[in-house]
Image (cartoon, rainbow, N blue to C red; front, side, top):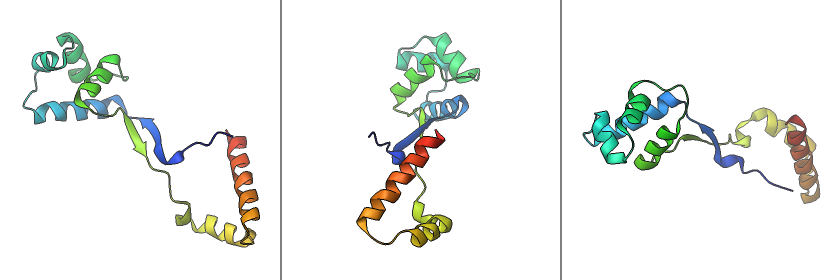
Length: 119
């Protein structure tokens, strides 16, 4: 059985967020022109201009390359919610679990089966 680590799920950032982070990165270095950014990153000036100053509609190869250069992730890191923060979930668990390890395993298998059924 394959287990999905839901604590490190990733979701791509929208292009405008990536552009904002990249422009901030280069501004911190005192570089704001597409020509200088192109020289630093070894990416064509027209590609840099199109991607950082003309608001791309999608995450392009150029944006990915610029992110790699700037060491910026193109993904959001999503933290999984803490199950113990749900009063409903904790109440249900306390009412059905008898405290034994064997029943804990059965409940766990049931929850994973429920997750697979929803996919």
